[in-house]
Length: 163
Image (cartoon, rainbow, N blue to C red; front, top):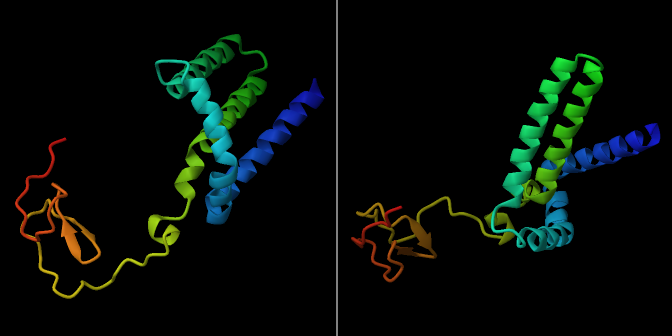
């Protein structure tokens, strides 16, 4: 039994170190997102498409409810309190690793400008005029696009979308 626990903790430690390394080193996160994550994504998508609800949310809510029940049991039972607390911490660490391996490491990739080798301009382009309408916020090359996406008029009065 101790060997299984040690192997489980060793795997958890390696995965935690990988997650933290990927958070600190963008290139590791990029490698993971481009080579490992697509397989995980396909597997999770195939499984979750069998259900008409969010399986990930059910996993998270089930983990929280299970941990609350187990913590209550630990407090009431009183026997082996610290061993049970260690198990709760281990379960939380597994949920942490699960989240970052399944979704979270994608937040630590290169930003859009780095990915596309673009450099945001620090100065305004020639001929730029302040826009009268706050809906016209995004500039593609030297032409401003408004919310209607049909014109490049800098003084477009198209109303912004209502959310």
